[in-house]
Image: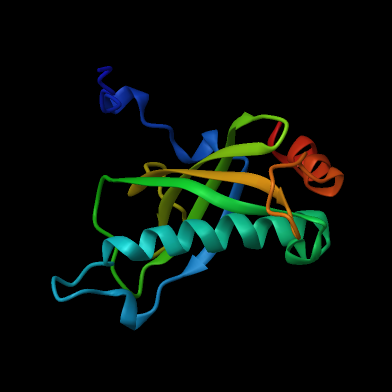
Length: 155
């Protein structure tokens, strides 16, 4: 069995490593009884940021394409607390692009009181889309409009 090691502090990417910073607001209901964002909220923020960015970058409603991206894997490593009403920006960068799949590295950054986005992430994640035919749900090539957006903004 292969072991995956946690990134060392010098392996953790900074804000500058992410070509896209997508603002995603926190909500009062996102906090749990311990006063910080519940762990499942991070997955929702990542999902909203990647799909919101794709809709904006492609100029189309990606849900209506003949091939749709379904999430087949996601993960999150928590590094520091985030709480409502923190202003969060999700960093998005391309980790891998295949014929029918896209692997994104995502990170949650908080905007400080002065309006600056912190350099270090509060959380790091992985978000994987596999494109499938909208009718048959069988894997298919990444739609051209998505491929073009990835090339233009993340490559």
